[in-house]
Each structure stands twice: as structure tokens, then as C-alpha cells.
Image (cartoon, rainbow, N blue to C red; front, top):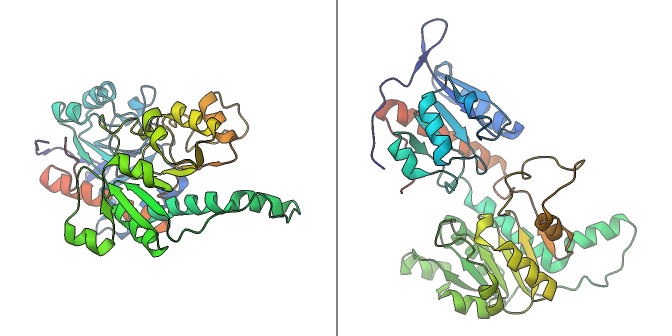
Length: 355
């Protein structure tokens, strides 16, 4: 993305001092706590003003950004061309994503409108990898069912038989930071690991980790467990579909902690209904925007596909929490402030996604 220095990014407070104003969308209490804590650690915290809103960035909420230089958004905020054009008219110069993915932002439109984009390329990849493995182990050993049984005084073991991880074949789709962490964990279990990625790591690093690169079809036919750690783009959308699922081993465990759109959910449900897939662990869902990060416990969920997914005993669905550790939240805040500071001094974000 071409860079353009912004010389008028600071507002004046009541005393005439320069401050950088940020509006954070989709804020939860843990976001506020981590950013307020990190703000106090800065050399001149008085130079920043951060305001929070629980609302998601959308057509309805975009006007709240009026009077700010920068907005900070999350995975389900709307960064479409239509929204970016309104932000440009308002005067937004910088959009910060407090996440590693940026598929929800139209980067070409941002470049056209001279809006800089910053993101957090890596905040705690081991946190996501650990959550993915937790989903595998819970499905394999039926821990969610065992927990509920014991709480009800039922100590039977019927229906709780799992399998040894040692010697099983695991397919890892995506060998970036998160993929490499999960490979280490599975190798620690004594698993054979096959991996796929268009952008391969060096042979030296691959040999140290102890895995083999293969094509997708080989993973589908051989893997007992498949864990997805790819970005979502036009090439990877619905990578897991009817055709790919048909190639998978019967009773495969499928894990997705990346982006919901990587899986065709209707095809997944059909495979669950037929008994072809043994277990599914999802931290993401392709139509999650309305529900995830919100409390619908007292409301009707009108997404029939989501409700159907939640009804299967061999499906575990978590609400996009794989990243959620103290360490990750602290690092997200740290890198976000670094992106702001670099933008103020150089007119560009320290970490900018490539088109």
C-alpha cells in the first residue's frame, strides 16, 4: 500500500495541547482493561484519548467516528468500501485492527481513500494453537459429556471411549505462526503431522518441527484430525466443502479456529448428518457477526444453520475465544499503540497488511 504522510492527525484539547483521538468499536470489558492498562505505561499517556463503544462498526454506528482521527475495530466490524467512504468523509486517517486477520476490510478502497490500515500480525499464536488442541482433546475424550454427567451424579463411562493421540496422523492447513505452534504440540503427543500451505517455511525449520508438506488431497485421505489455520480470502473461501469432505477419512475430527468462511457450513452439516465426520470443533462460524461476542441466552437464535450446529453432540462451538488470554490481550494493546505512534511520526502504521 502506498504511504502518505498525515501532518494534521492531532486534535487540540481544552488546554491547547495536542492529543490523538481514537474510537474503539466492538469493545468488551477485557478490551477496555487491557488498553487502559497499556495506556498508563506510555511515556505521555495524556497525548492520547481513547473512547469505547460496544457497538459494531456498521452503517448505523459509523457516524460515531465523527471528530476522531482513528478508529480501532475487531473481526466482525464492517470495513467494506461503503463504510470506508463514509469514514473518509468524516475525516478518519487511520483504521487499526486489534487482530491478525483483515479480511473484513477493503484494502483497495482504503488505499484509494488514503486511509492507513494497521493490524496485529501476531499476538499470541500459541493461545490459538492451544485452544485448537483443547477442542481436539475434548471431542476425542468426550470431556464435555463427562463433565455434564458427573455434575448430574452419573458416573457411567458408556459412550465416552476415545483414542490414543500417539501415532495418529494430523493434517495442519496453514504453517504460519499458529500452524507451527500446533505442529509442535501434536508432535509432542507423538503424532505424525502432514501440512499444507501455499507459502512454505524453510526446509531447515520444517525438519526441526518434524512434519511433511503434502497436497490437500493427501491430507484429506490420511488425516485422523484436521486443524485449519489459514487466512480467509477468495482462494480459501469454502476450502472445506462437499468435495473435500467426501475425500476425508470416516470419523475424522475437524477443527477450525481461523475464519468461519473457510468451511461451507451446509456441507459440514450434511457430513455430520451422514456420520462421515466424527467430531467438529469450531471457534468461528461463517455467519457469526450477529451473534458472537453478544449474549443471546434469553433470545431466540433465528439462524437455523447455527442452531442445527449447536444441536449435535459431537460438535463443540466456542464464540471466537481462541485468542483470549491475558498475554494476548496485553500484546494486542501494545502493538496497537506502536502502530499509532509510528503513524503519528511517519504517517504510516508499523504493521500494515499487504494488498
